[in-house]
Image (cartoon, rainbow, N blue to C red):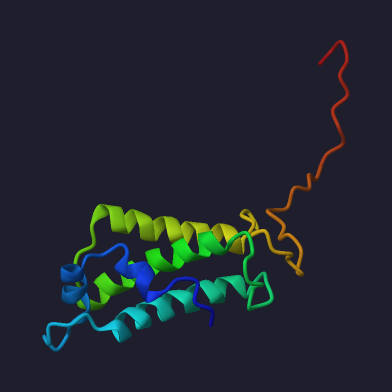
Length: 143
């Protein structure tokens, strides 16, 4: 599983007090980085499960979509940190999570490119065939 974000990525967003509340299960007064890493790993596995449907993993380093994947993993990991404690998530965090899920759906469906060659090719969006069950109507003076 690839990591698109790091523990520092989470530390850059959440203050130490919040991280203590979310990770310090034993009350030792220290941020528990393995808990953050577990949230990142879970998010990374979810992302890889979607990417695997369209791409050969691991993706090449430095690809165009790496910033996007970083943001997706951070959004999913933040949600995971709150969810593991049973805390209610803010509207902002819920929107961020929902947007991450929607973005992953778009990647899965081929509606959003990561700038990486997709060996499986674009996925069809839908069946656009038109079938006629009757002969075409003849227009004339009586129609």
